[in-house]
Image (cartoon, rainbow, N blue to C red):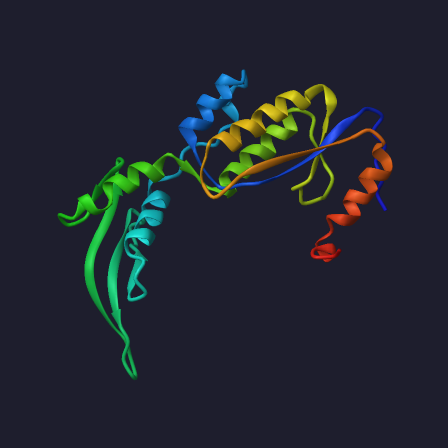
Length: 203
């Protein structure tokens, strides 16, 4: 067993995230006196376009397929048959230099594209939080991360970032949890034991 002695008080932190607004993350960080350099970069246009197409063409018989050029997608309608399926072209949708081309149907996608271009996925945001928690002295309690200890001296800064995340969530809910601890050695051991994947769902 690996047990680490930490002689100062602090807190355990972990998080559950939703989709967030990137501009709001920056504004909320600055409002709380935290440099927004930790905020992840905007999503790539092609990734944003895929999210938009999945929403607009959510019907089970409409499929979104990537183009070889990697600048867009073809949307097709699938008709299932007894021995083979037929595919009819609906339209090709591409994005270059931030502009959508969709065979005259750009209006179907523009508003959603602008909206999603500024959103960060839970995965992208989590990466930003991992990088930031390390700058405030965060110590991972598991080899794969996801559970950290933050020293008391930097805890207020970390809590400010947590409040920023919670205030900037636009889809699903988000929480950054902070659990204070002083008697650290036994607590740390218990947390490592409880956070093992094999313990998931245990009472």
